[in-house]
Length: 263
View 1 (tube, one colour):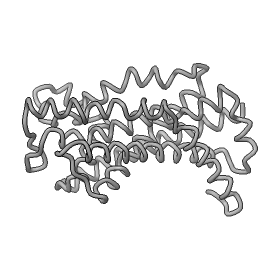
View 2: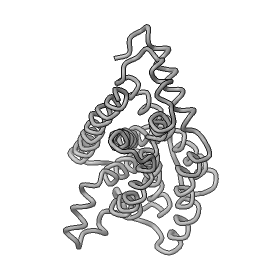
View 3: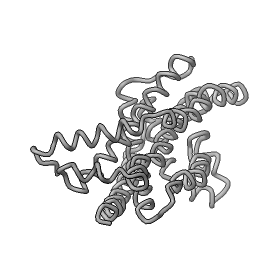
């Protein structure tokens, strides 16, 4: 809990997290690949396969992948969300944190909020670019906000887990190494680029797709963006699953972050 007297320090910590993370590496690392999918891959594949049947209606392939690419932004930012923690632990930033009169858990929450804000900025930039530069992507404010809230669960989970792993490692390149191994399997074993029916013939792939949080996030974001009907049970299961993962990640992250400050 943030007490009234410590609120200015809390917002100082949040603003620091946002400013430190907004740099050229953020723009290139978070936005470059998703823009390639929206501006090149999507239109080319649309010419090849045409429209996709999803949610009881047909939409263009580019429109189909756009919500999933927004989720990719969250995945990328989630893995990179520990960037400020890397600076704090390995390059002498912990002294700055010690000067703020707030608890370790609140400092950790400030880091997570900073990651979410950076992800939101990236999603806004990507959405505006897609709307301006393509003709198949449409978006409402309520659809965008609903999708953003879903994607925040991925940012919270991955940022927290990365902070926990970094608290137990002496390698500042760990998040980059892990993201290099996990991002492509998470993307291609999900419903970002194709509907779930593609996996119907393989029981193993169906299970992997089902447990992949990116599947649940991209499906929910797609339903919010295009106002597609979703079964209440499906909606509840996906939301509970994502929230449980985010909560588990938070517990791990706070534990690792507090241990680092104590050390």
